[in-house]
Every structure is written in structure tokens, then in C-alpha cells.
Image 1 (cartoon, rainbow, N blue to C red):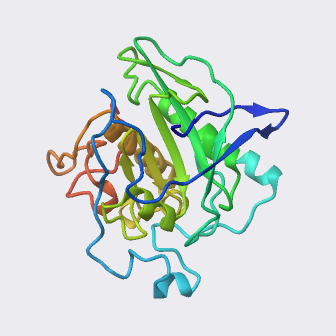
Image 2 (cartoon, rainbow, N blue to C red):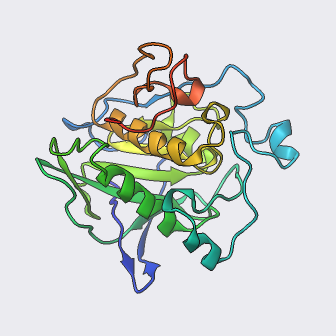
Length: 264
């Protein structure tokens, strides 16, 4: 049975369903009309010192991306931050290997034909699961995202038949689930109808975004979800232009300006 996704905050806590992360090569769900046909990602960066969570930089306590993790904030401090800047925690190499499927349904957001999505978080990651869940909902529900203010509506669900699944996972799990694509502990990917987000990129971003973690997080979700909808990579259209969301911005901006929205 396919992994069920979805989320809902119940009495201040998120109900979850435990499932196992599949081994490489196992069935991640048959590609549907809205799905990528196989693993799609940004490749690996040219700088080999950035692409391994266990590199010298990580061992020294620094991040491999564009922002340093903040000291652990209290729940009150976290709640005072903008949603897309919460749970900026330490990078990890691995987590528990189990996935939490966040239970519940959200409201239908936008107009047009309905696309359903669900959210998963690998067990054992630092940070608050609810922060990731709410961030995904806020990004995908924005009219500047794939809904395009009328092209489609989106809704969180927790059924096996969700059109899209968005998973936050540790680098080792990303590498395993994106195989045979080489994500090398650094980048994210999409495989079938699942957008697989590398936790280290989610919490640290990349250098080219100049510490603008909020924009990078918007880009990361919209880019990988775009692959599940069948969109491939594109190049920067010209110096100073907003980077298209399907440009591989994790690996460089090619003269474009960083941008996270499908329709900025």
C-alpha cells in the first residue's frame, strides 16, 4: 500500500501514522498523470566539500548551506517567528528511518480542479513537525504557487490516494529514496508523486540565497512539487531576471535573482 500523507493539528499535537521507509528500488507508487516518471533532482554541487553532511565543515559544527542553525528556541520564541523561519535547527546525517504521516484534512485552498497533497516527516529529526506541515500548507496554498490563483485548488489529505506527498527526511534517507539518482547527502529530489526534501537544505538553505531562508524554503517546496506535476528543469532567462522556480537554484542562480514562487 502506498504511503498515506496528510496532516492536521489535533488538540495542539499532530496525530501520526508510522510506516517504514522503502529500500532503494522498491515501489514508490505508480506514476500518475501528475507525477514524475522517475527520480528527478538537482544533481550534486561542484564543490565536493559541501555535499557530504559528514564533511569537515559539518564536523566543525558549521552548516553546509547558507545560514547557521540558531540556538534551540523555546516554544514561545518559535511561535513569535514567521512561520517559514521556524525550526531552524541543527543539520543531521541520519534519523530513525520511519516516516510519520501527518493525519487529518485541511481546507480546500483556491479554485479550479482539485489536487490533493499530504505531508510526511521522518521520525527522529530535530525541530517541530507541525512547523514543517504548516509551512508546506502555507506555500502550496498561496496563489503564487502551483494553484496560480485559479489553475487548480489544493487540499491536505491523509489518504493513500493523495496526488502528491511531501516528505522531510534526513540526508541518508533522501539518498536511499532518490536512488539511483545521486543526491549525495546534499540535494532534494522528486520520485514519482513524492517530493523528498533534504532536512539539511530545509534548515540551512544555500549560500546563493544570502541567508534568505524564507525564500529558499518556498523555492524548495515549489521546485520539488513541480517535478511531481511533471515539470522539468529550466535555465535562467537572463541576468537580473527572477529565477524560474524550476531552475536548479540550489546549485546556482546563473545571474538570475533568487525566487521561490511559480508566479512571482
